[in-house]
Image (cartoon, one colour):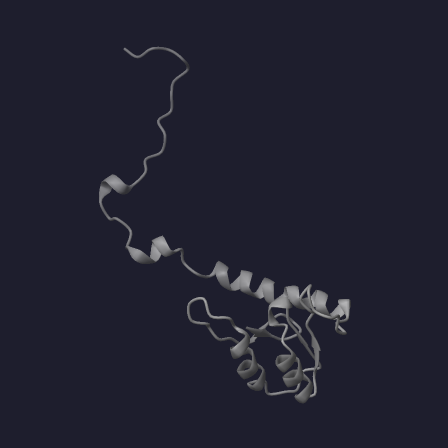
Length: 127
């Protein structure tokens, strides 16, 4: 998913199964109508070819390296804004139905209705 600086969705693509999203990232960035100043991504998108692609667009990548890789320039103030995409996903997930609700319609039988609990008197026994 690509989000703008305000955390609004610009474009998205769904990866099949357990496939990684990095191959789709190239295409999503190419769909942008304007040149971004920065492209912020998490460590999962660490790839020299992807960084070169971002530089070729005229933007600056803010993608930290994997722990076993050599350090690259990634300003912390820019990278800290990556949570806007996470917040966008959280908002989108709030709108989806649970899988159980999508599988079956509600049961219309009277037995499925819940009755309010009976009130119990003041401790006295009945007649």
